[in-house]
Image (cartoon, rainbow, N blue to C red; front, side, top):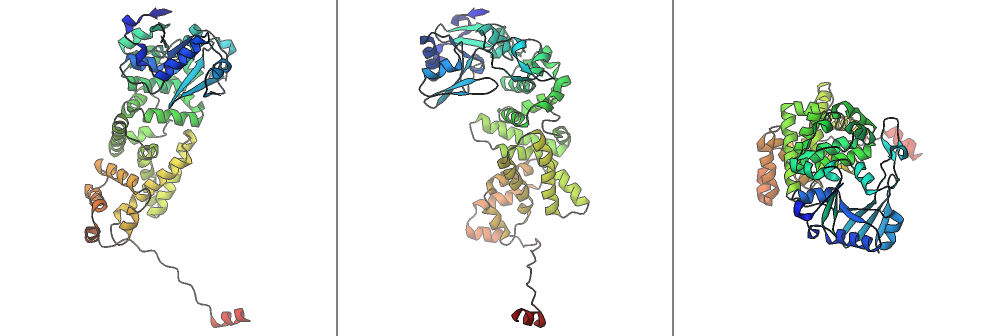
Length: 424
């Protein structure tokens, strides 16, 4: 263990949030130790703004909770306390033990349950990467470094604590985290940390779909999705996460479309604008849907029925691997189903499409298709102009309605003898 003074690392107590400082001070006043730990310390040292602050302590959850007016014990695999101060929530965790004999694992080495408390040194050994095992003491402004995390940050290296293969078997999601953090922080994966990933990639199959979905969402909405997906391919992790994503990326049109979607998402995230996960997943899977729809049409199915069946086919495969919520898949279906309707620019069809609840998202999707060269730019330009035009201009813009009209079912008249029988 090394205690590094402020003059060597430059981090002051003013850099942490007032809520995190208050939690640490309250715990210390009650006779416990308390440190800001993990990603917040790492990000501050890299000159980045942390999205939240975590605190580690030797106090047990049941000792932490009574110290704060608004606090809640959460978690099953490992109990934590969420302390709410103003608009901020500080996650307080008790130091964990590192004894492998006390941990409940499955036959592949994945940790199932882990509620054993320990010392700060053991807690540091249990953390995943060296740069995440840095403890900042707001009182002394020292950083406690057990595994050379400060040196790795200076070298811009992401290194696993302990044997990487054992750590990945304990929690396969660490492989995804390694890729995401390296891309997000601009770090290079240490060779020993990177080497086992391709071999252990099949362990991702055993991660619960809901957890895998959460991790994929973090990766895709990190602001560095393009770099993350490139890294996933490089380390051999992309197959199985979004099934057949590698196939999509090998098609010139599909690759350009996905690359543009990811670049736009990264730009929105980094500029603080909202991003729709439904739109992003719809973009990632669009060429899968398109290929399946065309294959069905080639077998004689009608376009609308073929598209509906293709959506079912692709989403069935995806939802088996990723627990994409019904709310998201419903929105994705709406966006996909509206794409053929943009080709109908005559009569009342254009007006009805304009009034559809998901029109704006579907139009943005159309614009992405046009930018990638999948459809003529003229189609997107027409809809862009039609949206902002006044009533007279819209009327003049309409094209002849050439779409097939729905046949109205005519009620059959009863034969006179049948009508007489009914009357009797």
